[in-house]
Image (cartoon, rainbow, N blue to C red; front, side, top):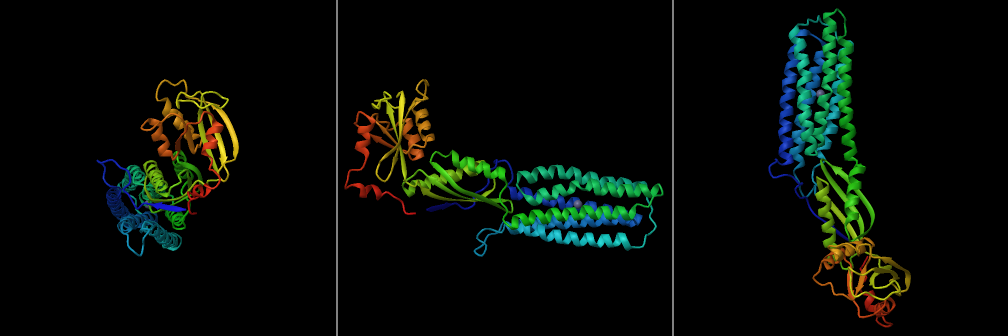
Length: 425
Ligand SMILES: [Zn+2]
């Protein structure tokens, strides 16, 4: 078994766009600005009105402000990499999210105490306060729309969480607005409204805690991404079987590991194939930090040979692409005993163009290991298809499948050299 792994390479992105780090940083600063503005707005309303609900909302803004600062700090730290942290510090982003959750729960507890036990101060409500509270719902909603889009594009869990949290401001500010309107109508809704705002704050904390812990505990990549990776690996012509495939998140990066059986007998070629698979994965799935492919050459228990036939009786064709039939023979590698012998029609015989390449691709999909031919395909399309898939081409002078097989099977006394090809496990 061998392993191929590549370090970090830049995620695929357009040349005109900023790097994801720069984008996250920009939105992080924007979020700080929004939270400062909201905090000041609500603070002035809270002081002027004496409402506990507005005070709770101000604290809510403060919590959000700290979260935005934490996103920026996490981003800076997570870009570092050192000998002591060879896997990178991406999870700092998630550690910070979990730490924030603790802080948020504490804040919620404080406001709850206020709402339940503080002396009610006389509350005054002026029209400008109602406008201010409405603004503190509309501003974050607009900002979150664009921030969410940017966060998804940069695959940043902290930006996405920040944006989603802003959406709840419609509800928390809505509750505050109702309590102020209630006051004008002579209803005392301030304390219950403050408790509802606490509920929103706590919900934010729970979301941060849950998502952060999932990543910290190496929860699996989502099923859709894993399925996509599996498809990419399976699509490679040299792949015989995927034994295991796992993936995890770390910050906004993805780590993948796969055990694959490859139809390649020499390790150098197998290494090249595993790099090709890795590149294909990176092209399909963004933010892949590392792909580890453990590969082993085909177990060599069976071998599948293909023969172009002129006639189903087993006489070999002089041609490859034009051959009307193909014999597909499965042999036991140990003694070349035939285990299965089938004759199938060439499905691409009537195709006008690139017949040879189509037939070669079809044989690769039939998981053929060797093709035994009378026509030399050197320098032609099929040779490249077979080369990429690790399918061996063998020229024969024999007239029939059975004669060709006899030529190919190792003679007594020479079997040692055949087994010399087996790879160390
Ligand atoms: Zn908030």
